[in-house]
Image (tube, rainbow, N blue to C red; front, side, top):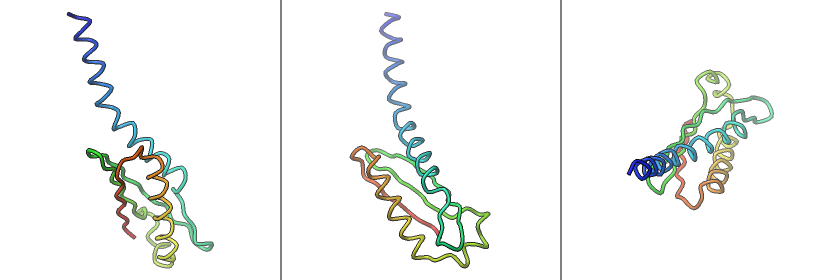
Length: 105
């Protein structure tokens, strides 16, 4: 009986942390690949917030608060192109889940 309860706890624990692992993996990958973006004259630091709810992964992309001055002269089109690349990257890592990317410039 004790072995069965222990086995159930391990299984429940694995499922409880499975979503967290995917969220952490995607967020770490985005920070490594797109943490700083450039329009060939200025650099911006991006912040990512990744959440998984059911079969959908939500990604919030925003410019870091410390990059406020650089943001005023940064090309919005370059930022939007990076957001499209970020969406493609997340979709490739999402294991068939829906991906919704919200960006805040």
